[in-house]
Length: 101
Image (cartoon, rainbow, N blue to C red):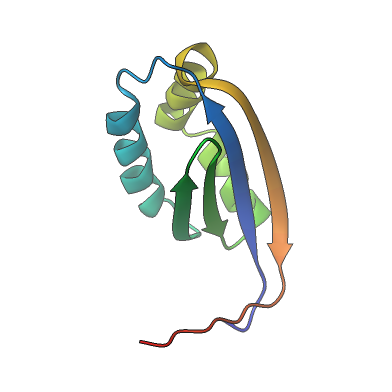
């Protein structure tokens, strides 16, 4: 990709109460894919969870954050699923990768 874009990095620690979490996470991923400006998503989890979504513009990120279904997921995250989280929004100006496949 030659043009710059944005990454929303969501780092978190989960609680022991994960009832409904996986279903909501799947729903949010599919819903995000339908949002204008969505580029992609990556995640990893051990003791620390990291989810990164990629967006074309800051306005696209703002609109996703304000999505009513996403707002519901955010409330559940604060009330049930996360003991801690941090969100970072970064501009990606360059990328490269290695793939031996």
